Image (tube, rainbow, N blue to C red):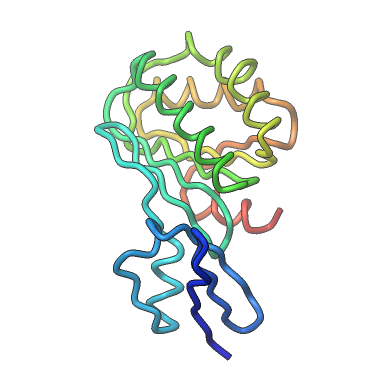
Length: 172
């Protein structure tokens, strides 16, 4: 049975085949509720778009997707990861797909900050699994690999492809 009801609260509740989704009204503008289209849209709920970062929430598999682009600078990285942390908390999400595929630049000076400052705060906020997709850029890849290796074992892993990262997140 399909049902969609706005109960006068700040959330829309959607029940489909005994699965409930709760959404704030800002997330459901222009959503097509036909089953195939609806599930596709629920995999790509836009949370934030900046010049260097796009954040989406995959409500079907329950993870935040961070897609980075451009050149990493210290400010871009710190601001972006703080925004990721905000949405991990807001969505009560335990998984992060951190896509660095289209990033350039060496950011090794921030790997300590990511591993020992940001990551513990993200874990305290509920993050349990962090899948990072390596960049095509050699130096960015080295930085990502170093950061992932510094995070507590089992919680963060690097991947060659988005598909492999998604597969791991969906298996844990």
